[in-house]
Image 1 (cartoon, helix red, strand yellow):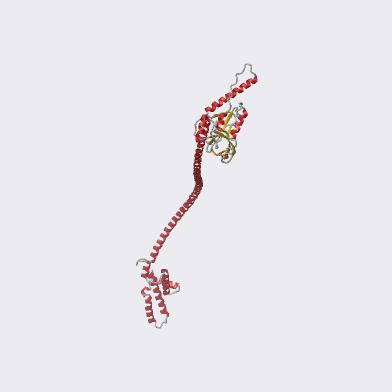
Image 2 (cartoon, rainbow, N blue to C red):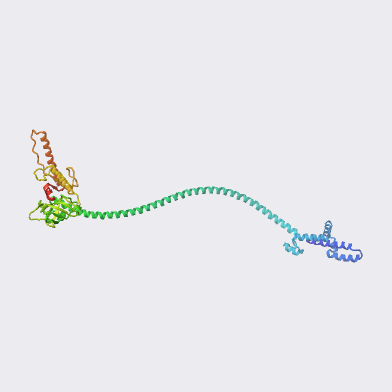
Length: 444
């Protein structure tokens, strides 16, 4: 077609040239005709003018009111614009369009249209498939959204459960930590308490040991006192209450090494011995010391005494020891006083003299229990004169005789019962004579 176009253009140019020739004067018409023919032949030869395409080109130029050349140039320009190139070389154009010698632009365009249609159909199919895929995706998206919503709801529920569980775990952990802290505090406090308790127990134990040691010494001394009172041999050193510290040659008063700090009071009496061994010998023999003294004046650590009784040829000297079997500076002996006593030695035992004995014991620091029954913590029992057995009642005894008989009988039985119980309990039993001998004697 390009060739035809070119031919058409050439013919148009020839036609134009002939027209120009005819319109240029007629004078040299032959020469001009020859020249015109030659010029026209440049554009189209005479044998080419009869071709159908030349006629078509001429008609087209006439219809468009252009010359054949103009028509051809216009068409060439249109072809260039269509081809998108100013190069009108056919070979170059074929090469540019990737066409062979036998290919035509129409055929190439037809192929291209077919390819475009195929690609369009394929694109349509792809769009259809894409639309289907989009619908499926939308459905899947909707389903996924529903599933996601359900999943989110499930997750929210699980999160709530996990939150509750986490709160419970945290609460349990907090309580466990609090319990651990409390236990640790309790353990520390317990250990501290145990250490303090052990330290306190150790201190108490040490104090108890010291106390036991002191009490053991006291018990030994008290035991010696009891043994002395009961007439059994004992450790002599434990029997000494004080020693003679000095003698006033003018008044004859004696100073002993014991005072108010040892609970000594005025009026107390002591026996004086040469030494501690003499105390034991005196107790075994039932005799008194070489002198009896009574406290007149009491100082903090010394006391002034007067002599109540002395033995001829055995004067009281400095260094002698004094003792009172029922006195101890660190212990209050308990006494049971029962019966009637003849303290003033007038031959008559009376209850009033029993009261005198009780008051003397209290004034010495002892304790007199009430009643006439033995107790487990009793140290001494002092019995008065043994009641005589009453004579049998006559057949015609009066009420007063009967009453007196019953009272006398009960007094004798009580005396014997107390004596037996004290002996069975190994409680020392003293009468007035022995009590007086062990404590310094005399009414004072």
